Image (cartoon, rainbow, N blue to C red):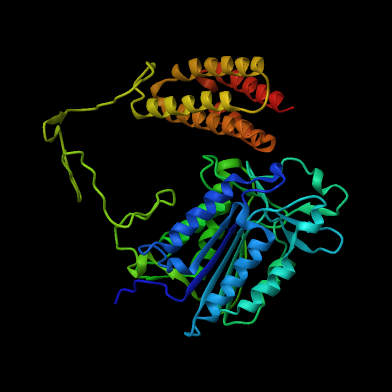
Length: 446
């Protein structure tokens, strides 16, 4: 029998994406929390009842708001008569460690100076969580952000003995060892590492793979539930790989489990993943059902095998059809040409929007981008993939520039230079221009 709801599942999702101290804002956190919320409550994904999940972002993620959320979670679970409740607590935001007594603190929305008076101590939160007392509990902590998600300046921490940090082992174990038949804590990185946003800026690396784990990417064939062990093992494998590929940095999720291995959600609404069925994309919001907007034209569904020309209604397409503007490049880039065009268009827009540097610096940078573009279009067609990868790296670096993120500009600049190096044998000027671009961006941030 296919189950249709994870009826005894409850979740409190806290995303501190804004602060009264503007430099501490974390825009990506709101997108992470919203993506997780959508997946949890969707009937064909995790299938939590919508009334059992609460999302706190913006001003709702204040000290009082977070405590009210914990009280709400306690009340919901107290009203569950099944003795089979599963609770998920997700916190994404800044965390700091008191270097003197090793106490760990979360930073809420209503953060103000003196900063020590407006923090939430992890031990106090753990005590409130213990009062919830579900049978099973999963705590997810994403607390030390970098790559476009970090605190810009540490002025408010000066003289406080506080330092930014992911949740250290002593903070995690307070939750992991609480009474209950199943307890698990998953942290996005070790205390010495940072948590990175994806280079496309759409979601953090950690939450992206967390959503994957909840939607069939981590489960064996035939499974109908998402087990906590599935989540832990999948995220622990995938996050380090993505961090290395994106930025050549280390990000290692840490987890602790006590008691039973327990389900934290239904898998695809309890249906599981059918053999050969494509797995969901974390970036695509799940729809309630199939929707086809043909605009009066034809709709073709199911598996399609076609050779030669394709006719749909009055439209006949033979061979390739490409609409819109295009660059005229040496060789035949085909699909790569459009991707390169898109990357370079985004680069130009990001430079215009950048809040750093002056008009002269931005004009100089645009001139360098034009010079690099001229080099890219002269790359032989056999090296199209490398040219496309170079354009993508440039887009990521300028996105970091637009956010004024010095650390990520440095990381992305190193990645851009690595992407340029293999093309030096066919276009020696590429490495020269790339070096000038990275230097120009760093000067704009000085």
